[in-house]
Image (tube, rainbow, N blue to C red; front, side):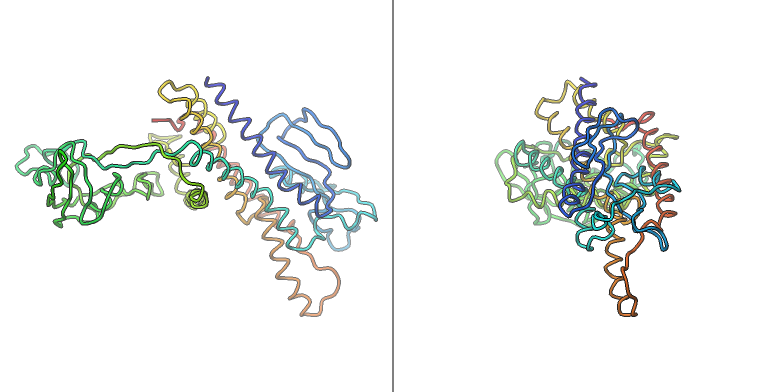
Length: 440
């Protein structure tokens, strides 16, 4: 079952890559660009077949892909315009092509108009954005299937699961004696109470209740609870304590070193849980669901430097892996295998978790590829947009003839970015082997 989960995820990744490259190829062919190759994977070619002017094939390692468009870069001044530098949409194949002194492709005079670099700006952007857009579409479809087809667990109550007789000291150590009861015990809060509102704010989740409580340290606030069918109003004064900082979903926020950030807030000494039910979300919620997914993924990428420090500490020290942090394909495969192998997870939940993993991966590919640096798709988009800005300025200065932006001049940046990516992927690969993310 573990192997089945890994295989299913590999197939899902390969399909995602295939559709990503299809997102580049379809508009490229539509706009008349000559596409000579469409390849899934990298390494030795396992199978290929030529149809028309395009060779379609599969390579040995299905974790990458590319299409080769003729004339992605304009010829340098003085070069033969019928000999254009070869390149492709693949990350590493771009670097290999650009590193070769003889990386040129011959084009016939009657095909001179079919090169990528001569396209209008908007068509270049459409072609290069087409790949990441396909990843967004895949993620959106999967998220809609999960949320609107299967359903999401939704907490509908905030119930008191336990009441501590006394609190730990402000330093976090257990007190030797307990002369003063905890705020929850002092207010008369009991196990089984259902919290309906805190300080006048209606709550139905653990996060909602604790958020209000934390915002009122050393301030008396009313809490309305339902006990044995009777509503009661209790008055409670949260103690001031150092607490873990959490995001909107209740997950801990990590700092640059990979440790949980802390804040000063109110604590009452009660465990608050609740009842959850699986509910299908209406299709009208789909845009917000996808939008939240994109925002959460983008926030992870913004914090990549600090999260990688946490990964380093987990790989070479005693740190713990952040379950919401980055993983390599190895890590994703291991999680997929653990999900399918688990006997504590129902079949429906396994399907939902696997679809969620694949959706997260596609969201990551969407956001990652839009970073405006070569060799990523965003680097080519940025070059096309810069060309749109540069051209009218050049015309205003009286320059004649064709005006193109040669993004190949950013090759040193591309090498630097690629080296950083290699180090990052290597670290994630190693961490996913020695200290992988584990399911709770």
